[in-house]
Image (cartoon, rainbow, N blue to C red; front, side):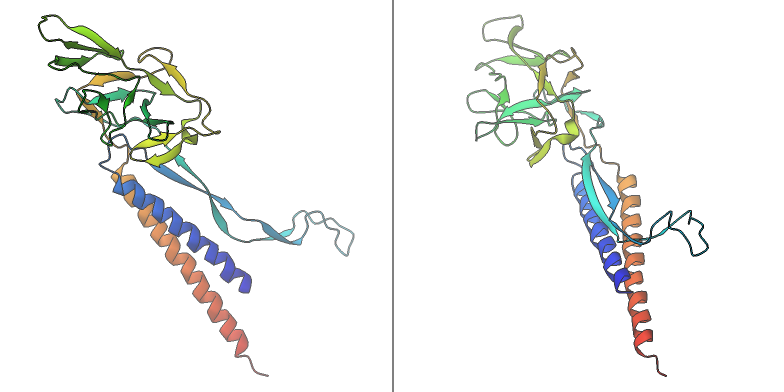
Length: 262
């Protein structure tokens, strides 16, 4: 019975972390380009009370053994990179990615961050930056007085410069993709960082070599499905209640055993 108490405790801990993940997903339901996180579980080690294949007293071989599991643990959190819906904004500096790929931005420590958040702004010198002020790489600078800023599906950036009537190319957006995007590290601020699991970034032009296309005047919404997360929340809550009940029952059984009298 003591074993059952500790086993049930692992279940409560696992469901609590599951609930933390669900809460994080729901908190980011309106975060631009957010990708939902899925919790995965594994059973823990087993205590073998009787090995399979053990010979009985009659000389026969037992076809099965007796194993008692010792609980559960959270094995991984996997980020699901499903495409989010594209919402029209009318803002020329909002550029969504339709398909695979990430924007590259320069971080203050000199490293490169990767993001699906295409809600860009202009800095004081006309450079295209994220909401946190990180510069898009390669850098795109809109000249002072430039008008009719536009980005086509292949990432070609154009604008009408002062004194001119036709659009002029002012830059080219490049995207990065990874063999295993689920291996990227979450950095916060809608950014991801490269890891050994994600592999090296593959840089390319939007619309080519497996890259997604760029959609001007659109943003990508979160891919969190509120109904799914609510169902997961109910499942986690009920599992937590049932496992806590197992602890209560185990304690009552121990109390009964302690109260036995001759």
